[in-house]
Length: 255
Image (cartoon, rainbow, N blue to C red; front, side, top):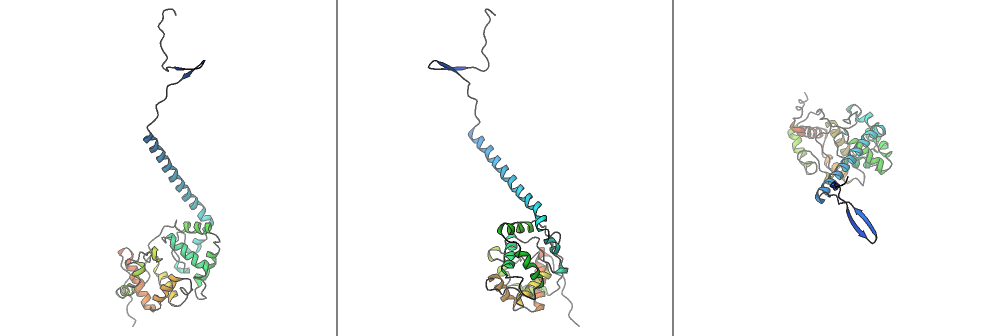
């Protein structure tokens, strides 16, 4: 319309003459600050890493029961052991120790003595874990078990047991919590009947005699000085360390 004032568009167009061509140039959009961009990128990476870990854990948990569910036949649905068939508690064992014992069974350091019936049952099971990925999955599966505190079953003289435990503390710790650096597992939280059985195995040559088993040899040297009563007293003391709970009272003297 004639005489009407022309208003400019909100999107202002800037022209630059290049030779004979005139090109419209849109104004630059404002860019977010670099620091904010970096923060958003770091958050995104953190979310991706967390999702990756969660996916890996979920995959291991989903595949575990199908691949290693047979472990629960002896060791119990939740891996807390079965005294009736002498299958120890696996729940709560640290991954490094689970791996070390699987390697020991596979190498023949454990489970080859004729008198070690439970060990002889375990040895071919471990030997069937034929490669590194399978071993890693087996260890990861064991770590999914939720440990329960076992009920004490051993009755002994805890005062004498405390004296007998003194050399054990050098590796297993004053509280029986174990020491990975020394290859010493936690004793507190393990079934007491199993500790009794393994001390007897070390003493009687069913475990710790292989030339390559340095940790086993050290245990055997200590166990050689223990008779049956001493083993019971020592393990009764270990029971008393568990969460400050007292071990069962000592058995009355034989009449």
